[in-house]
Amino acid sequence: EAGVAQSPRYKIIEKRQSVAFWCNPISGHATLYWYQQILGQGPKLLIQFQNNGVVDDSQLPKDRFSAERLKGVDSTLKIQPAKLEDSAVYLCASSLSGVANTIYFGEGSWLTVV
Amino acid sequence: QQQVKQSPQSLIVQKGGIPIINCAYENTAFDYFPWYQQFPGKGPALLIAIRPDVSEKKEGRFTISFNKSAKQFSLHIMDSQPGDSATYFCAARGNTDKLIFGTGTRLQVFP
Image (cartoon, rainbow over all chains, first blue to last red):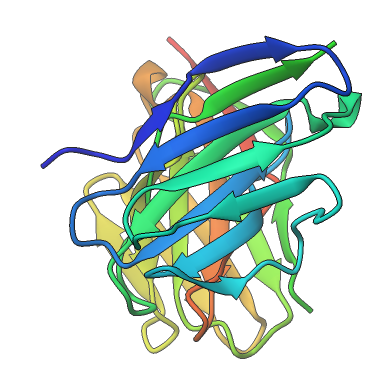
């Protein structure tokens, strides 16, 4: 079974530029998550989708971050304009619906803002 | 209320030792408690998980102890090996499928 795919793996941009990350979840997984992991910290949920609807985006900085999952499969996370403090790993994860189902993570997209 | 507090921040043990990582939570709506293992450059991977209706769960060398009344749970790694060196995160999940992570424990196991 293929895992959660993310791209690009690494990105370096200047502050105020924009960047987009793509995620393809495990086939059949209705729930998709984007997490931000700053170095030395635990992952923090940015947004959670159930199919193509948003379940939770309470911690998404909506003035600069946006995410979509138009067809209920793959998803894109965009940052515009980027700030230095956005330097982090952006982890995509997916799961079958239901609280007891395992959440599987991709390997992450590493963003450095200079 | 949504936080999961994890300690210690780092842990160094010798091969064969039994590192213990502790977590505490406040929100009684949490009903699923996984532990994730993360190697450098990789995403977190599920290690073991427990639901609050049991007090202990063991899978291989990894054991979760759960104290519902104290709202605490811990991970024990028996006969630790250098290959166990990684960062470990506890987490908690409620009825919205939202997974809240602890701050992580960096474990180093020396030969």
